[in-house]
Image 1 (cartoon, helix red, strand yellow):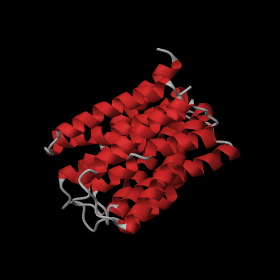
Image 2 (image 1 turned 45 degrees about the vertical axis):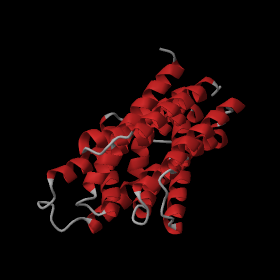
Image 3 (image 1 turned 90 degrees about the vertical axis):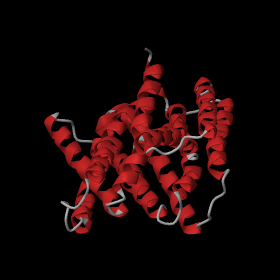
Image 4 (image 1 turned 45 degrees about the horizontal axis):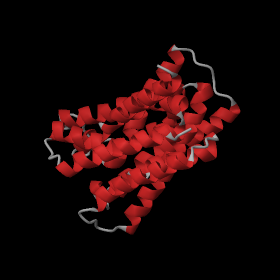
Length: 287
């Protein structure tokens, strides 16, 4: 398998892992405060990341790399999880899909601005078409408008797209798993302090499903998924591989159907097939 193909495979594995975040979060927030869940998962992942960096004796990032790592930390460790947790207090999960559908486009734009990539014009057509399909699916049943929630979600998408692009660019020199580990370590002091301040009074009353949900978003969504995701972005191109995110909402819904017994409609299946075609088209014209 060539480097580009490996990038798409790693990216797909990363997206599949991220897709489990939605059902895991739905279970966890039944018993955990959303803000605590955000900082706790970053704390747990940060402690594991610190241990990995020490055990494997990784080099310290340079001053320029630290500046980029701060951008990554603010985007994907702190910004996106916190802003979405706050937004979901005033908007529905269906509403959030409208904005998640814009994440591949934001990642591609920042890939051009920060990664120096130059996809062909046809790429942008498939990129916009894929985003439109996701947004259209979310809008089909109507939405309750919340200006505050909308602004928070828009901010979340922008900082996440920047964090993805910056991490993908930095992975070319620092390494994919090293990028997310160092970003988590940079955020660890603040996340640890907030976790201690916001922790539940008692953990023995928390059910096993909620604890498993916390474990999943901490270990997989916040750490292992990024090992594959950043490696994929650096190998296959930030703008191109970033389009795989279009599949994330629907993979998440499929997992929710299997684990939480939520219904999957024919429309969801049709839209997923349409998105696969858009991603295939974007891949063809990415370079």
